Amino acid sequence: MTNDDLQNLVEELSNDFFGRPFLHRAFFNKRLRTTGGRYQLATHDIEINPKMLTEHGKQTLIGVIKHELCHYHLHLVHAGYRHCDNDFKRLLQEVGGSRYAPRSKQAVRQKRKYLYQCVSCGQTYPRVRRVNTDRYVCSRCHGHLQLVANGAWIGDKEVLR
Image (tube, rainbow, N blue to C red; front, side, top):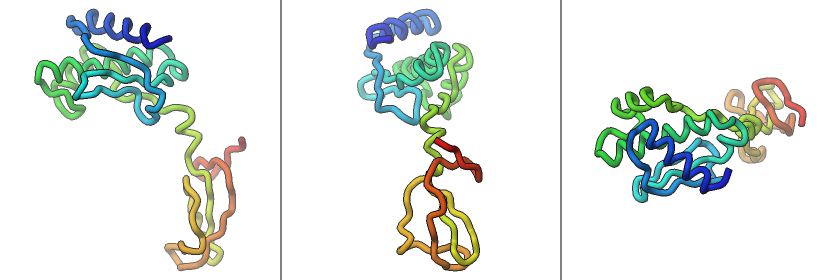
């Protein structure tokens, strides 16, 4: 799907579900990582994470577009457009938009790459980033930390790559 196809889809969904035209730009932004989409208050443009389509399918993409269109239309009529506002929650439920975007597969895999263990007491510390073991010590007994495993960790189970 190209940006032009996305623009046409957003305009179509806006007319069908909201009864109002979408008069601004909609485009894919591959730099979005932790969110499904973003509505720009200043420019009224909508940016969509392309992984919503490639990893999760067209139905998820449509749900994210409806979510962003709720922000768009409520903001333009000066109603409550934020997530905590009742206007937003009510409109999102009426049009069947998604409240939350699903997590990308890469975000799930990035959890806890390093596992450190205290040499004295055995306390474990799963971490996403590396720790300077010369500078940091165990929070329980102030013993030295040692790198035990270098790989993706989820809970206490090692995920082999």
